[in-house]
Figure 1 (cartoon, helix red, strand yellow):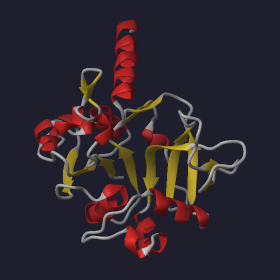
Figure 2: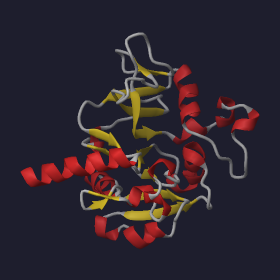
Figure 3: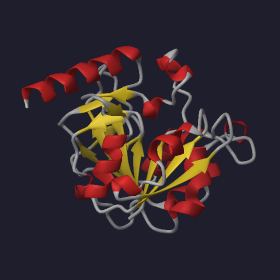
Length: 237
C-alpha cells in the first residue's frame, strides 16, 4: 500500500511561524511534525509515500530528501504556489497513487496509532479514524455498526483525526458532491470534506474511534502544548 501525506496548506493560523517554514516542517519534540508519520508509515509496511506541496515547496525535498534515510521512497506532488486544497490535492496526485487504496495522513497532526491496523472493508470508499472533538462540536456521527454519517447525532459527534484509508474510486464522479462554483480551476481546487459527506450519504464510509493520544497542531498554542508534552514524556523515559 502507498501513502499520501497532505502537506500543501499555507498554515495561516500558525503565522508568523509558517511565514518562513511549511507547517509540517515546524519542529516539535526536536524534529519536524512530519517525521513521526514517515516512521509510522514505514513500520506499517509502506515503502512509497507521496507528499503534496505548495507553500515553500522547495523546503520539503531539502529536509526529507528522497526518503531513503527513512527506508521510504518519497515522491513530491507539486500544486503550484497556492495549492489545490485537500480534495483537489488528492485528485491531482491520483496518477502517482495508482488504482489501489492508499493510506492518507494529514501532515500537521500527532497521534499514537498503529497504522498497520487500519483496513478498508470491501465496498467502502474510505475508512476514517475519528476522535472525540476537542471543542465539543463534532463533524460526523459514528454509529454502532462503524458507519460514519455526515452530521453528529443527538448524543454528540466525532471529528476526523486526519488519518484513514481511501480508495481512489472515491473521486469517480466527484463533481456530484459540489455546486458548479465550488470546485473551479484547472486543475480543480476543492475540499475533501464535502466529498466524504456525499459518500457517507451513500453508505460508503466507515470509521474507527481512536481514544488514544491525538493532537492537531494547527495553532501556536496547540503546537506549544504538544511540544511540552513530548518533552515531558522524553524526560520521564
